[in-house]
Length: 286
Image (cartoon, rainbow, N blue to C red; front, side, top):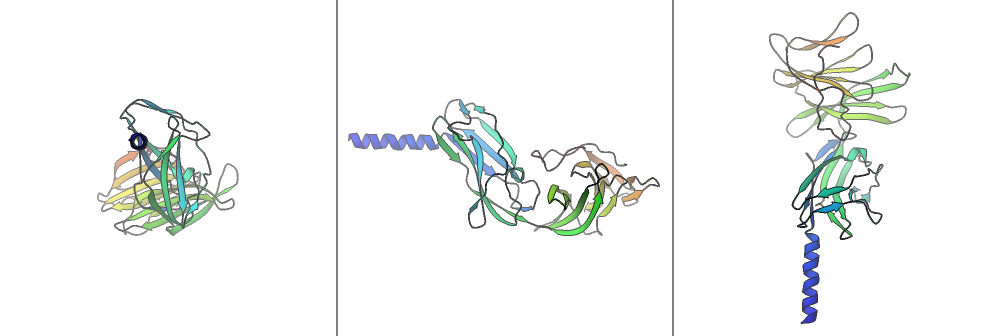
């Protein structure tokens, strides 16, 4: 009887330990383009029935990921972010959005498996999310141009990439230095529909301007800097005339025609961890 009670107590303790924290992980989609930000959304729920502190201890980081590639190759982080300690009230859920592209070598084409882990120092125990899968592929290059960087004489290569998904096609831009292999940014410019090729221009400072048809009678405009910054983004509606990029005598690029419907903030680098932050109110004329 005593052995039975001890065994029952151990089982109850183990069950309680498993229920101390719940960790969930999700991605917005299954397929990604190489080098684009890959945002993992992690939810941590405190089920301990009391306030807890999550912190580094015993030479363990309290928050991290485990990634494998292909047939099980374990990926080592390229950069270990220091996570500040987290205090959680009983029943509280905390959500974190993490750009895995900035932390792991996830640019090789293929299939990846990932799970998030949280180390609870009070129990000297890891809690894991269910394993998730994502795939990294490449997209078709439809336009490419190498230009100089006026400030230092180096070069940048702009590429426009078309990525066909099951129900729509997305247009991507990539900015890289092919002489060093550095990719400054890869990000989506949004949907594109087959109304001719996107309009592309370079201004006197070698910034890239792109105008694409993103929906019937709807056009999306973006201006991209030499280091991969999304400097401007705006939406135009067709009126009596279709929007188009036009160069003025001094070389400046502007959108002519159509009706400006929406602008979003400027100065945001889309490859950063907070990819979901859209840029703001750019001018439509350079």
